[in-house]
Length: 283
Image 1 (cartoon, rainbow, N blue to C red):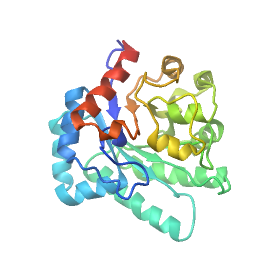
Image 2 (image 1 turned 120 degrees about the vertical axis):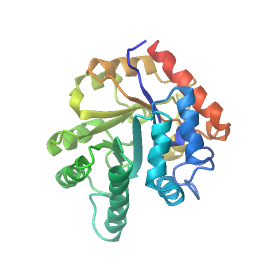
Image 3 (image 1 turned 120 degrees about the horizontal axis):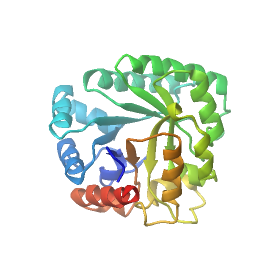
């Protein structure tokens, strides 16, 4: 097994019966129980989405959140997902509010990485504008020793690898890079071997999961309902992991299973199964 292997349970992997865009994205399980279940399964980190993050913060406060993470040995705490961060008008004002709340949590609790999305598919891709704003966010996050990573998605305007790399390179910040989720890489029809040429310092996060060979026609519905546990689908996880390792990346490795089947399982089962099915690819 890879030495010092560390896995992070992304929010929806152990969040319970919630999904992106659901009527509520707030987990039915307590924060403490999720962190405990993750730790008992073997995870070294957990993630929260913004809505759940604010619900937990309102209920527990930053001090208790930090105590829970420390009690169960969580080295990594990720939060997501900041969208519309490069746009203007009311949607940007809403995004800036979310950004401020995320940065406050980073300062008060400690956050390893903040995940950024992009914009709707019909929104023109402005590399220069996105680069400028990405660099500013990175500078703000750096104050709390937090990294930022941009994630391309095949159903968004930032829909493939090359422009994501370009934005990260041009931003030229040590704490700024890209997130590679195997689902998005596969559904964007990117050859996993293309990953081998990515500069290691630009890879700030990896997310593992699996998928059926044929997706739903609506890729957004496919990604929020039909993901599989590693090994239960048709993606070549071994090749993907090998390609990532060839860059020099050594972890931590995220696990993001957003599945209408998986999310209805008991919390302990969600944590244990996702960890065990992922860890075998490193043995």
